[in-house]
Image (cartoon, rainbow, N blue to C red; front, side, top):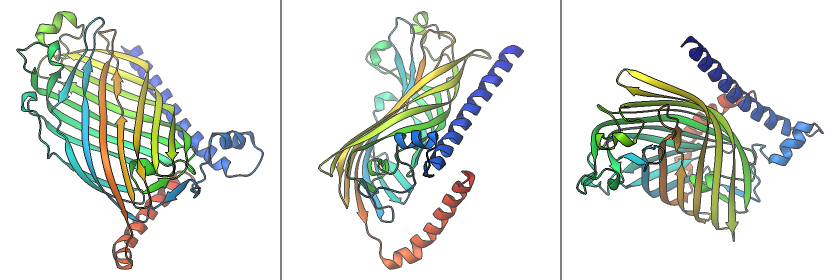
Length: 379
């Protein structure tokens, strides 16, 4: 047991060093690229992209100092998948509702609020939920934050557990997911995630970028009794498990590209792949079994839309599913998290009075935050 503990500590330290090293390398490369010399590192960096904290105006029109307002339709698909060799997988899902939302963006700050106005399916039981998700799209960086907590879930699809055409409901199941991932945009001078995701920029030419970054996630799903229904217990090695906990940390690489047609129409896609140090515990009462492994994880963002000086219309899908190894089964669990959104956004000029009384103080606070971040980065 002591040997296993030491091994976990060493593996954790290794991943932390790898993560810290990758961030340091990204920053050093970015700083080296600004120096016009013949250093090999600068030459490599120049081939990877342009990231000088200065937008190429022939590619990107920035409207960060306008107020961008939006109305959007949103739908979430979240839950936990249980798998077993040779068996049909099944999901525990919260009874999420479709919703409408309102939002506003100014510079790199975005605030959104959605409302469950379209109701839920009563046959899928009741879910008490708290979901806080946000993405911070800066010129050179993307940060994704998530905290989700659900109580009350249903089993899907119905036919896995035949209950006279009714859903198998588990009001006792609680599921929590919390974490962050971050990505450095290596061609930030010509590629804009803001144009696609926060609608306060306009990318008028096609461009792509490499991405470097990492992630850190924790998850926990538990019930008052075994997660696998008694009627299915004979077919699933996880039978008897009533609590699953996992932790993942790692670093990775990705690529994103936005294709622009006649300046206004665009299709954008980005995919990232990460190698994590992952640890999972499966509890049966107070007893548990653990498994540690290096584990890959892939996520993606896809968008289609129209952009102009004033108007942005976009449909987007963001998938960030988190797998978790099983010590009892040859298959993995999967914490899936998909967000689909249709957005209509409009950019507004700001009058002198509003800017002087409201936005100038906001600018001062945002500038202070940026200055502190630059100091931490050694700039």
